Length: 126
Image 1 (tube, rainbow, N blue to C red):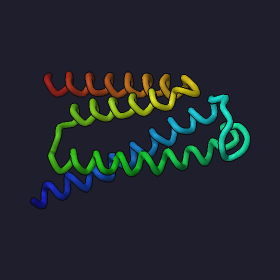
Image 2 (tube, helix red, strand yellow):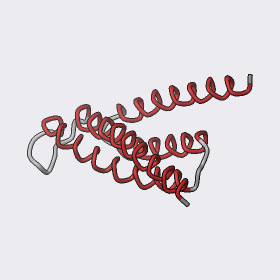
Image 3 (cartoon, rainbow, N blue to C red):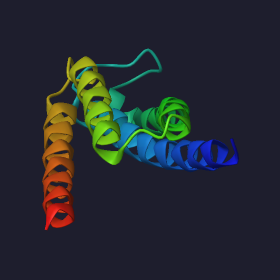
């Protein structure tokens, strides 16, 4: 029981950290490169910082919840990365209605993560 609590806490912290960083970047890219106007007044570009803070909070909450669940269930790293990539892609597709920049960023991050996963898996087999 104690080991599940420790891995759940580690997943909570890691998921929250990475979820917050990635979401803040995605929300910021959407606001900065979008040409729509905001209900806050003016162009979204003027409110990029506020959108990034909202993305940070959103990512912290979602990432921490998913990370805690995966940590407590002791899911392997590969599954966690695949589910994380899926969540990032869904969020990027949702945010790319105003700009394609979040989707491009999600593709780049996903390729980097998959390359790292492939390299670490091949090292483990040798």
